[in-house]
Amino acid sequence: MIYLDYQATTPVAPEVASAMQPWIEERFANPHSPSRWGHEAAAAIEFARKQIEKALGFKGGGIAFTGSATEAINWALKGTVEKERGNGRSRVITLATEHAAVLDSCEWLAEQGVDLTVLPVQSNGRLDLDLLARELDERVLLVSVMMVNNEIGVTQSISEIADMAHRNGAIVFCDAVQAFGRLDLSTGPDLVAISAHKIHGPKGIGALWMKKGKEPAALIHGGGQEQGLRSGTLSPELCVGFGAAANLANERATRDLDHVQRLWTAALDSLGPRWIVNGCTQCRYHGNLNIRREGLDAARLVADLRDIAFSLGSACASGSGRPSHVLRALGLDYREARSSIRLGFGRYTKHNELVEACERIAAAAVEQEKLDA
Ligand code: PLP
Image (cartoon, rainbow, N blue to C red; front, side, top):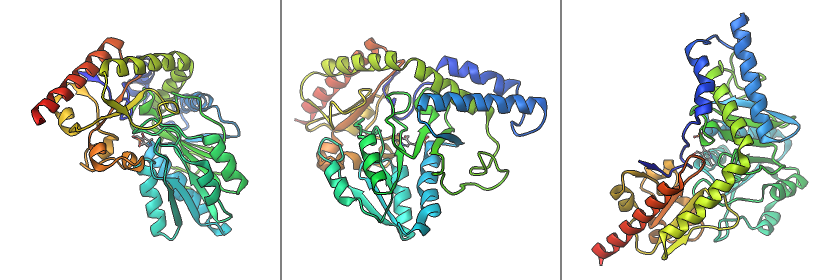
């Protein structure tokens, strides 16, 4: 099996698995209980929290743990509107290329009476900042823009977007799930969602970073954990795993990024001609290679090469059979979107296996073309 689906999830780092082990097997105390064991578990969680906050690098705030980034996103958007709506602002701006967790939360807010604007992107996947400038007015409460797109890897200028939104008095939320642990995060957002399993950590844990004073309304009521904003017993093993993954990503940032750049070049070289990269090739995280080939039936290609794990787009969208909303937002027609595949690689991808996979993908595409001729 050659694993090329790093945007869907990443392999758990060995260091992360060993950091988690004792908290699963022996040190099972409730971190919120007053026993010595409880205190130890609580201290381990606080240590992990600091590791994540350090890796994030933002000043003047802190994280609350959540069960996933999807939860953090829902909380940031819905909780901010709930808290701030009385202030006379009721407009939310987001982009057509956002993750379903953002778009569906925004649609839900629109059903509750929020005035929703979903901005288009340019054909390279980037937001036109002049368009944003024209849209920003005193009614805008919240601007939600992701940093690295999960389907095409294209980045947005979060610092500039945040500056513009802040000058208009809006709050800025950033889905940094695909950026955290991979790229330097820009400064600027008030709220940031991240997820452990995209940075070689465990599944089932995410976090919301909140600037002091910009915390959304409480999400879950109960035992008062996470500053009374998100109740529920925290899992020491998941928090410790997330912390270890963040720490590792922080330490290895340059090495990981150099590796990814080399893999990107090797992948393009071994695919050969006739493949077109979807989205900007420069403003991009290079561990995401979303490409198309004229006439290709991408779903058939994925089915034909079952021992290579790659996908058509987001893991969520792949199952639906619908062509990707992100590719459609770039202006690709139905056929072009259906002939696109996403190869995702990173820290543990070996050069040789990537080259082998790309050569086999290219050969299978040629074979398909011959059969269809
Ligand atoms: N946002 C982006 C950009 C993602 O890629 C994902 C995961 O696919 C999510 C949000 C949701 O993250 P989680 O799996 O932690 O809910």
